Structure formats: structure tokens, C-alpha cells
Image 1 (cartoon, rainbow, N blue to C red):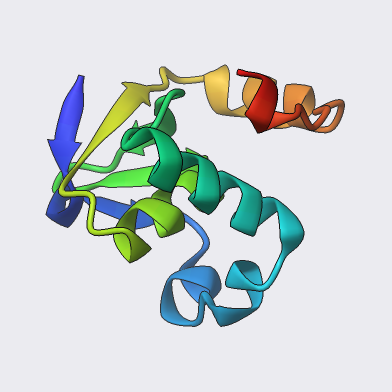
Image 2 (image 1 turned 30 degrees about the horizontal axis):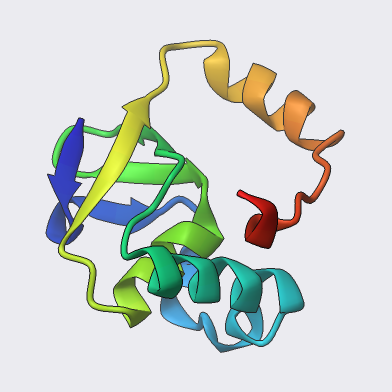
Length: 102
């Protein structure tokens, strides 16, 4: 499923208001450069539906990179009740991959 950027927001409101620190990270730059190179976002943003917008729970770098690069629609996967906790637990064991090998 894809949604327009206007229907998305970050769950982390501090990051939404001031993304400059995030944009300085090496991971952010790798993600941004990969999206720029391929022209699309491979993995959907994991979101929760809060009624009028979808809140990005996982995929902040993809979301911010997409905004920076002018992407108008984002792939999303809407999480069901209980899945947010599972995703956050799984994220603790997240391992970075080499995007150039994809």
C-alpha cells in the first residue's frame, strides 16, 4: 500500500520538528544515497493508523530521506494492535546491511 506524504508523520514529534541531527548520521546518509540511486524505497515504513494520519513507528530514516529527495508517495505497512511492541523488540537486535550489495 502507498500513501501520500501528507498522510504521514513521525511518532517521535521531536524528530519531526528537528530532523537535522538524524540527517547527520552515517546510516541516514547510506539510506538516503541508496534511495537516490534506486529511485524508490525498498522496505515499507511500519506505521500505526491514528485516524487522520499514519504515524511512522519504524522507518524514520527512509521517511526523512524520502522527504529530502522529494518522494511524494511512500510504501507502508499498517501494524495491528500488539505488533508495535513486537517490532520494537525485534529492532533491538537490528543488524545493519550493506545497501550496496542489494
